[in-house]
Image 1 (cartoon, rainbow, N blue to C red):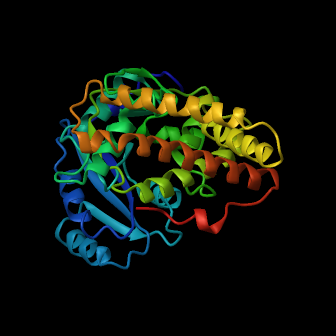
Image 2: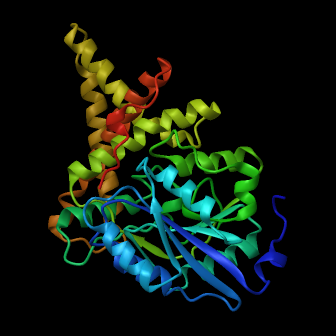
Length: 355
């Protein structure tokens, strides 16, 4: 099935595209998100349904959803008792009527041709999953910290060269932001692994790749993700990303990319050199590692600065953002590997979604 042109399906009239989105406690964001999703400009012959899996919100989100669904039959919402993304996505897939399923995120702004571009990319590539680049932008009037988080996020040097951060890249990829799938993809490769609180999309894309499937990134699929606004939020987010990555590797016996191993190895090196120094070993290896990392952070900061207009208050925060990205992911990876090696399930403290 891989590589077969899906034009016979995607050009037919009266086709449904299903947009799925997990949500929890999003009262301030859910109504603008629904309006944006329903305002998508679709190709002739396509209609859209919007399926929202609510993770038992307790901030009034459910009242907003009930009002919106009563006013527009294209909106359906339902409970996601497990309150995690993977179970919400699977519930949406199970209810979807569409020939094509598109994932959206409540904290992301989408171009009004986002879905149309997804459909075009599916038809042109014959891929099993398509998506656009992962562009991070701060909210209007945001604190300089969120601007720094967005600027560092976009840098390929900070992210280890991930293709998903390259805004101009078109071609085969190992993962894409969010995703758009013909229904046959889930029939062939299965749905999302509900044992994973984070990285369920990376694991699913790795499953597609290992199964000789095809993932495609198209720069014309445009969206803007709102990153975390404070360093403590970034730390919690990437601690979870790092923690769940070893569980993905255990399942498939390999990482999706070698770059995913680097932060954990770096933090492990820091710990080993620090312990050796405390036991009386020379301190210079630890000092040399820290000096090399400081130089690398400075170089990455200058790389982030190139091509972006960043004020002094934003630029001054970028080194702290980079260190937070790397250390939180690395610490989370080591804790995750400990639990994997001892054959433990994921810890409850890493199963609560962060925002």
